[in-house]
Image (tube, rainbow, N blue to C red; front, side, top):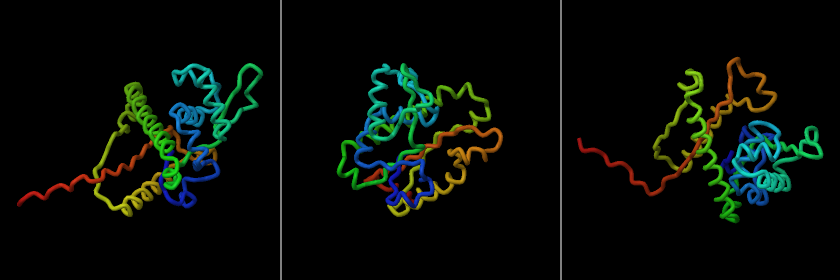
Length: 211
């Protein structure tokens, strides 16, 4: 999860299970495989390099390398209750990742761009995976699938207000902690909601039509 809110401590989505990227973390996460590894561990729980490699379509040596780098940066850790001398199990340390520092992006432009491009490509991959699975889902869930976009004309302040309002609505439905998961009603399933705010500067305003 990325976010450009100037004051992350004010965001209700941030809790002790969230991590805000600093320079070291940004550089560590500036690789698409590492972003995917962390995402898989958060979604599916602890795993091994071999299992992750199968999901990612890479060899186990590549997966092991990225797990070690993520471990050194504090994003994953060994699950000692599952591991043994032959096979190491890994788990995610956090539930979500936030990137909130425009000044850090200015200081580390290449790492910031690489990280954000990795996140964007994974969002696209998740969409394609859902599309591939859509026809096998119950009809009630197929009817809830949606791909929409809107062209808005906003000031930076209005954009920030819109982002906050969307966050408030989403926050009412979040049950991604063990404590909140128990409150989900019967029939609740995991649903991915991906938001993009894409400034498209220098796009001319639509011309008014003559009466």
